[in-house]
Length: 294
Image (cartoon, rainbow, N blue to C red; front, side, top):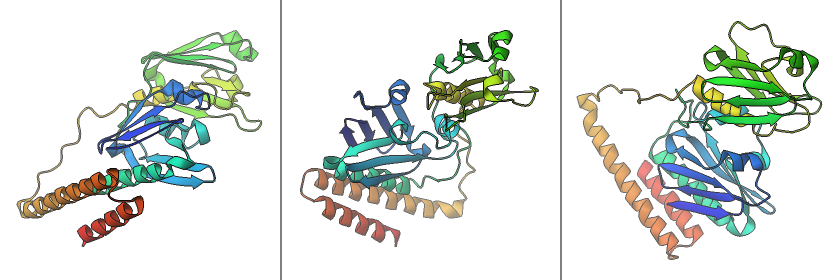
């Protein structure tokens, strides 16, 4: 198991699941605390890297398109300390962060996880019921119905129309964007058969804000709705039977895979016990992987 724990949070990886727990310090963004613990299956991961900086660096996880409703709905617009898949690492723990990223990459290679899009979400999205307040109102979602209630900051068109409630089955899409410059942040629901969208502050199916950068926890509502618009597959797709001529090659490949896992585990044990330095461990692992590819 690979593990790293710093003030920004803790990451643990057992070769099948990568568990992320946000830290409790005041420097940890409130959105990450609200989101809470994440459990990411290996099949949802496309890569991991350590990005060094003057004060240490950042451990960064990348997910496959279509694997996580939160990642899909934000489309890369949660950056820096608010990104739940980023861990700020102090200078004294950079070696552990590099080792962690290396372990994830190695397992991705061993299991031959594709980097392309997933057919269905592999993460469930935020739990429901979920709600958030920002700018001109409050949005809530109980898993079946969405409700928008307006605040004193809402435009008159919204105040006159009153609260809006509509079932999930009427929603064909959801979009979220943070506040940027003079542009409003927004959480907009696209309903089937609805009139073309107007400005966020006048759209009856849209919560808008002009001060909060990320609109509080609105992105969690967006991700929860998106997850239920495109639910996870209940069963994995059935693969066609392996042709008889390919069985021997498959068995040989499995034997090579098992041998590689055992050798890497032995190297990891030697590294953790202090017999191998970080440099010796990295060199030995690269050499082993090259030999196994021949």
